[in-house]
Length: 425
Image 1 (tube, helix red, strand yellow):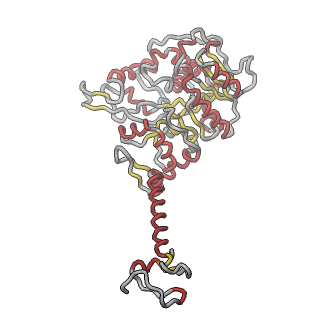
Image 2 (cartoon, one colour; image 1 turned 90 degrees about the vertical axis):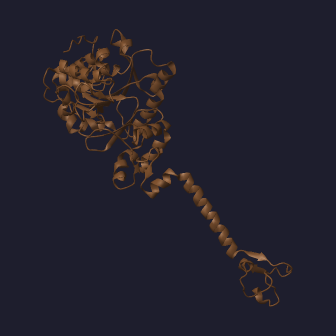
């Protein structure tokens, strides 16, 4: 298999052993110190939406400070350290810890979640999906972004969006070393170009899977657990060819010849509606990215369940607030009906609905409305307010302001000797 080193975890907790005679479901989260605040915010959201699954919080050992450990204990979370199970835990500090957690978790049916994932709905519904019941897994697709190439397909071509042409070709050789000279059955078709000839392939997909949420029935996938552990243990080599742990789960299933389910619908960055706009404006980094890439992109991924409803938002930056359920569910519906934001003017946006424009320029609209109200009030006063006629204090005779404009009107209160305010008429 391309010279991969084989090793086994120390004392793995395999499903169905004496320590776990009852099938359990739960969530496991790898928590680095830098993501603590984001995690507790997302955990509070998870409980608010009604999820009652127990949660394990994993670290390699010594990563989390005492204050964080106290917060974990106060929240009733299960704190786990990988150093309890492996001999060199420091080697697993990083993305690779997610490849080891499935081998040691106390749960037989596992939802492996990133600390920066914010759920809009209870993830327990994934266990009831047809895909999960059939295969014992459910994996989410990444956005299907493409490599960008320039030059001819001969010796002079270059890869604009990957690290180098060498990276592109090395991944091809690495995958062929794992699976052989022909593409195996069940391999994602969007990565079939790795078995094509020399040169580059137009519309070649960068990544297949987003590993922000991974669902595995450990009882049905001992081979997957073993292969995922090994791929991430050898991360010095694996991560040269894939982006972190994200592809290692379905690759592990393929290497173990075990079935897996990959979501039909890809993730999306698009947040095109009025509902998303407040979140987008929150991030100055996002504004810079939108101007640079000429696209209204969220710094994160919106993922949907098998029925097509928004399930979670995988945030990619701490400066972007989490989107709520209403935004995630109704964003595209509103965009399809014209309540959308367009980005064909860079920098900035062209807003194609008056209400969306009003939200973008909310303070301009408020001040304009206030100025209009003030102007209307002044005009009304000029027409309806009365002024005290000079020299007639004893009678308190009032005359309309209209007479100040030179308009003749009859004397008020039947007084014929009252003079008009403007002389000469």
